[in-house]
Image 1 (spheres, rainbow, N blue to C red):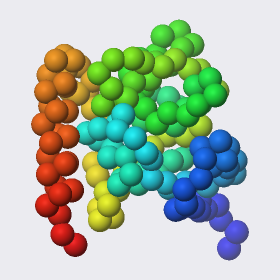
Image 2 (spheres, rainbow, N blue to C red):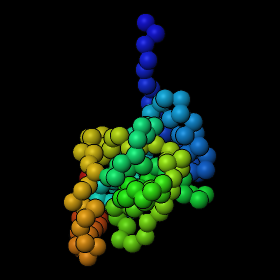
Image 3 (cartoon, one colour):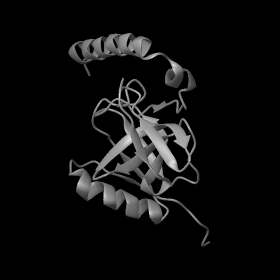
Image 4 (cartoon, one colour):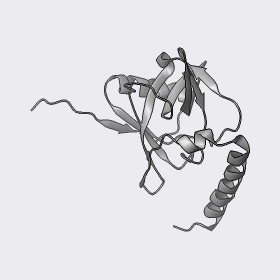
Length: 159
């Protein structure tokens, strides 16, 4: 009767990250899962900010290729682990052509375990091995085409 279970909480309000993410962290530490809609385009083409929903849970272990929510200085990022160097974890947004962040395992708040599109369909969760190793110039052109396709969908989409 008293088995262990995990509950999930869906956050559907627009609040400051400084308010929401500490609450996410508390809920994750209590064994809950948290679903929210991230903002921004740094994880394109795998996560579309403002449309897709991601579900987080506490990370049991970190590994190259997984997507994490991490605290970097006084901000928060939802990025992929690209490398692990000694005790430093190197994060990089899939849609970012330059720049990377470094953090420690203590800075990781949670790991993405599910991505759903705006229609509620679950997207394939991948470690993106091919994407991570593509030359920047190829990513640049792919993202340019992707942005145009998204823009076309938004202007031609009817519910």
